[in-house]
Image (cartoon, rainbow over all chains, first blue to last red):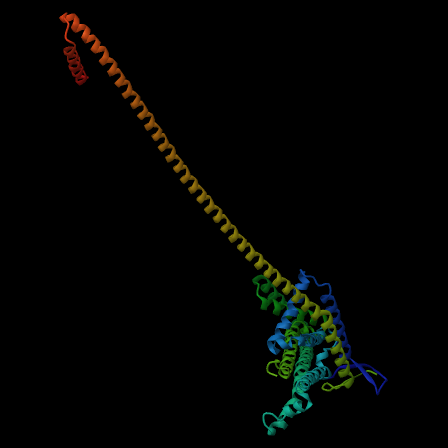
Length: 287
Length: 168
């Protein structure tokens, strides 16, 4: 399994690699910025349909941030929104087939996780000063210091690997399923193609199943009938190299691995960021 | 050069680009999407709040005015009633005055008439007395055809008149 493809290397400063991730992250940025300028422009007091949706989304994000981080932290919403949208678009852009998901690269997720950590540290230092921030590691007792340090270092690593692992793992699994299905279809066609009679019989069974499926409105019969009929037809035509079984099944898997997983990981990543940063910025009354 | 990066690894340049992209995305989203939309929502919220406050104030004012008018109307009604009562009382008093005046006048007219009647009667009686006296003397003279003494004469007349007066 390969990482992102390196398109070319700019021969500067020891070689700057332009990879698939660089490109898709740039594309996501351009898309999001364009969308923001288009959707955020020409706002009216009496909103149209588009503006209602935009306002709904923005309000939802603000509500989410305020309920997780507290009202005093609502100014974090634009960052959380940018993170969430970059993450979800970075994951979904892999489905286009042109770009590789930018979140399937540890460079991306690790950068975002580190940004979250630095924001937390920055908040703590701003509130307590450097001394107070360092002293925070010795709490509640001095013995806990190594564990606090470890958890502080583990936090961005775990965030980065969680997001990266889910998206990259999804794409690995999808490609595995693709190659497995290609192998299976080759094997099936090889078996059926050995004799003409078997091919004709399979085609006939397929046609019969499909006919009864259409008549009886049975989904399973239609599907199996189609598969059998296509198998028979392909073997009769001698096209044994067609990976026809790749149709259908990966689409259903993609629903989970790309859409569901991408959405959930974007949500989890921004929720964790909210929680960590929110902890570092408690309400002013408590400070 | 075309190659592949390792599957699990961090390329510092990619990380740097990601960082910059993230910052740009953040800045653009904030400037062009979140701030204006949030401002619009807040403005609208404020406008709605103001409108509701205005509506409440107007309602309150209308209620106050209504109460004021009702009070005014009530006072006018009271005044009218008082005036009516007064006028009625005055009219009644006037009526009584007129009636009593009329009664008094009637009484005085009647008294005058009675006095006149009494006077007339007295006069008539006197006239009659004289006439009857004369007549009696004449008749008596004729009847007895003799002269009666003056004294007897007078006594007779008086007696006669007394009798007549008693009879009348």
